[in-house]
Image (cartoon, rainbow, N blue to C red):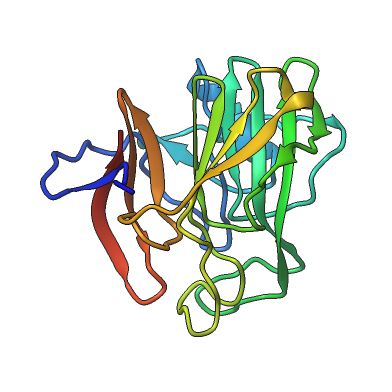
Length: 231
């Protein structure tokens, strides 16, 4: 079948919105909606350390928030995606006793669990969607559009430096439809595509009307800077 993916050979890249130093022992997922300050609260809640944005140190603005409900384990390589102004979905990531770094892989388990975070009442709720769910993974990419959470790529385990010691997730596009509500959410998968961005982790994905855009990452053998669009 004809693939919906196509490769973009020439693009104009935008300057990054965030600048500053990041702890080498930390890894995090950004969740931002309506106001950038919430991004800081969210990162702080998950115990990961980002100290500055737009070259301005904001330590005095960081506040630790206590959430109730089905609190997820501390993790890295997960994604946090806002689905509206006051709710976000956390998916996947790795849990364990040590965060992987340049010098130490650590002991960790890749997860595929999914949580709804309600920011107004500060509560986590674990979801159990039906359908064909993606395998457990970390360092994947997500984006939300029109009641659907899209997930692509990621790593399944081993080190993050070589496909010979760790496997990569498949190159199918997974979709979580929450149009009927979170409790009735359903997974589906778009597979059997002749051309895809290929297996990769550490990439980013964004929605730019009318496309899903995939950029960069690592194929398991080397970092890449290619751009793909899904129409």
